[in-house]
Amino acid sequence: MTQPNFAFGDNCKNILGCKPSGDQNKPVKIDLKEPLLDLKDIGCFHQGSIFLNKEGKMYQFGTNENNKEVKVENVKKIWCGTWHYAFVTNENDVYMLGRNSAGQLGNGNQTNADTPFKVNFFNEKGLTLKQIVLGYQQSYFLCENGELYGCGSNQYGDLGLGPKGNQSTITKLESDVLGVYSGKISYFFHFLKEDGLYASGNNGSGNLGNGSNQNVKVPVKVKLPEGFEHQYQTSGYFHSLILGEQNNSQVLLTTGSCTINGLNKELNVFTPIPFFQDKLIKSFDCGCEHTILLTEDSRIYCWGYGAHGRCGNGSTTNQVQPYEVVIKEISEDQNLKVHAGCYSSFVFHCDEEESTNEFLELFKSEKCADFEISKFKVHKELLVVRTGSSIEKVKDILSYHTDEELEVFFYWLYGDKITKPMILKKICLKFGIENPISHKLKSDLAKLFKDDDSKDFTIKVTIDDEEEYDDNEEEEEEFEEIFVHKFVLYAKSGLFREMFNNINENKKINSIKDFSGKTVESIEIFIKFLYTNQIELTADDDPQLIVEELQDATEYYQLGSKALNVHLTRLKKQFNII
Image 1 (spheres, rainbow, N blue to C red):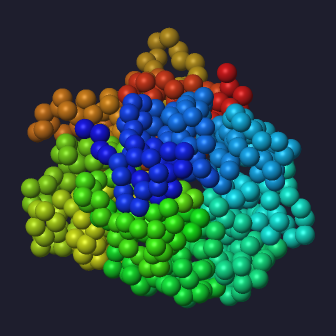
Image 2 (cartoon, rainbow, N blue to C red):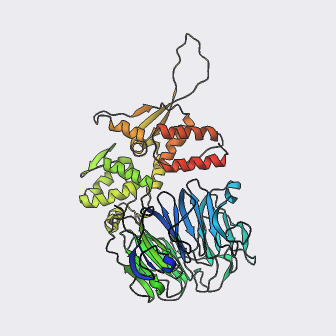
Image 3 (cartoon, rainbow, N blue to C red):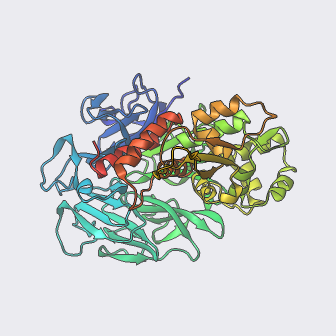
């Protein structure tokens, strides 16, 4: 059954996609029909919104005809500025469209684009994009190598280029950058480096958090509280928010205008919001002058300007401190996202990540388990790597918890799924894990890949030996052994899943000969992908051979991962493989 989605705030030209006309000061159901019943993401620009479905198709509401399909398919993510937006396809192609008055589309002119055009700049330079962020009239592009590029307005130092004017072509801004942050209606930006946070641009409300209210043309370093570890941030027109950890606890920092920063006092340095100190924050987003925030137990909070009803408090009065928006149809076990438009707010359901589902299914199947804790069959090495503890300590700590509590813990351990955050935090604290939200399964699996000592299964790959043998001499077959974890093979590969399901539980099988006919190099790259969801080639690898063999291995091992196909498509483009 499809779960309902909700919106409130500015509904000019039916931006919200809901049936009642006019602004909505309380949550109302979004009136979506096929093909938008299964949402993947929502993006908002001024007087318009973009709805992305699971099939990768986009539909626009507001400025143009409602429910108008944008004629690009296989879209996996969208970003919106105030008047322009960008999206990336499953093939990692980037497209942009919208207003271009300051050159924010980066195509060398200032002519608006009514239809999407492909951005070739990064492919031509052999750069892989890591992050895209759009502001009011500017765009930022962060590459995997740490190079930060931008285009558009530099009126207030929006690009950090000093006295230079607007940039209508994509221009390099910085190197060695870890993350870039702005907001869909912001005239400023922040970026993170190893030595700290930097900011540039409009600062009239202290929104840069650098202790001043003066605009900044060249990036300056922003002082954060002692011991604070930055995780994520975004901003509005007059305020900025940062989520991170301090003293092993989650902390939300704010700065900017008093009406919208959540503390009801003027700020120009980043300051904690105490209201959220005992809550686990899942995500948040900033509109022009308001914020919507989602906790891990599916509670929704809003604060800021109340015009258009964007805070969902039943009025248009300002909400100077966080207010819980109660939606009766939502329960704490639902997988939700929140999004802020310029003057609106959205709460919608979304599918879990593919990798998360795979290991949750492993947990539910009880296959390849090593032992039982209460009624649950579990996998030793996953317990060890996720908790950072010995198996004896794990067993001892978990023995004091009820089945209900254990189920909460195992859903997080196998799938990063947080159903009851307070119960989870209580258990995780016993393992020294203060913030389970930032403790991701993906990172722990990558650690497990490097742990050869704990691997319990061997794949024997035949080594091609071109040495000639005497006709009377019997040729001995040589193998290269690749070590893996049996439970990873079960979770990821349909071939191994079927094999393990057909084996008598009393029969132990610890190795198998690989019959795919692929090279050792290809099988090693393939196995590493099962753990890391990444493909990395060395200088000695033949890209064309590797891509061909990985494609065949995907079919042979019955791998149901879209991520591998995305990587293969990227490699084909990078090395011009037909």
